[in-house]
Image (cartoon, rainbow, N blue to C red):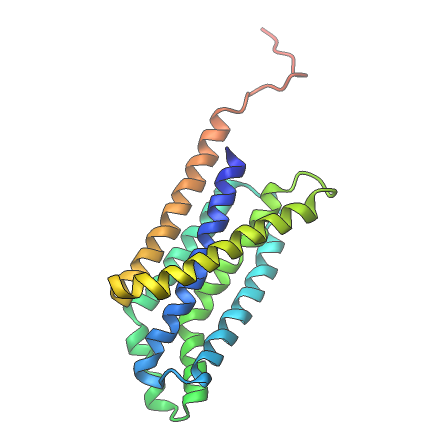
Length: 211
């Protein structure tokens, strides 16, 4: 069951990352347009953020990984998205007033709003791999499968956001939807951690209980 939970969480993270990235273009468009410069800035920021997230998540996964810590990553990611809901317009207007060049303006604006949430979400994939890796012999297969699941989630997040969500909801509503996904994942991971600890026997098979 824990393996299925981790797989579901990795899928949800992939969905959320790409949905968030696609919204970036829509959020920046009123201020900097939707040219190749803007999309180049968005992609650069997200790729940099994900690379930092992969590095950080890999380091964190070395120190006694568990689902409670995994839940914290999702919780922090959810909180990190909140500024993009409440303050993105203010930040975009500020950058737009200071930087006239749409290339550097969009790059700075994207960095301010999207970098930190994307770094945190990038930590999820390597941590997922560590949670499911049971031996060095199967680590490559486990990593490949989880990155397949995460990328599949990203593909579905891309198609769902671009084809449907932007037609059904406002940008702020979609951001709240992503926030809800990440918060639900945090709750699911933490609940699974608590339940698994309750089901773990206090004494191992080799323990001797003295009266």
